[in-house]
Image (cartoon, rainbow, N blue to C red):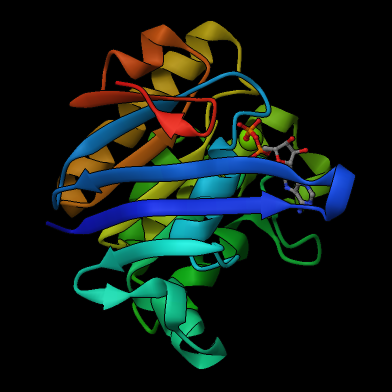
Length: 219
Ligand code: ADP
Ligand code: MG
């Protein structure tokens, strides 16, 4: 078992403003497995990904990644987690505006001391970014930026990839091509993939699907 999430709860706000977003979520993922997470807008999908990636703390529950309890890590531990174990493709890309596409793609892998120029070039080619490498993010379309964000995560070959609507800004044909590339690359790196998607078509291409509703997983 690579990832084991048990009974995780998360609430935002205080008093009357309080919303219970996650009310006891459990899920698990094996090494190399691909899992789709679906659910209505506002159901807590991004929140759950942030908790698994160590970007936020749950109120209660346990999240174990390769045996490490994520929920109790200190800042240094969370930084190590993000460097060595888990890569996140953010819904809003979070590219670095001052870096060219090539340097955005290699950024995470360089931080981890695992940057491989041949692999970076392979990624750029398969994601259709080879002619964009010297541009800055602001010079790219939304769909191109999204592909850079995917490339940056794949470049570091993390054991677990968390991808938040990674094809949400692409037209259907491009989304299919990017998903093909992503699934092939994920298999090559033997990474596990937890992908948030609105698309039943995208979800159907994963090994398993789970659905988040009313703060719980309903498969
Ligand atoms: P999804 O990704 O499924 O659309 P989110 O996880 O982004 O849903 O959000 C779930 C709910 O939690 C929403 O009602 C959202 O407004 C709320 N929420 C998310 N993050 C925060 C935050 N940092 N502070 C307050 N409320 C938040
Ligand atoms: Mg979201």
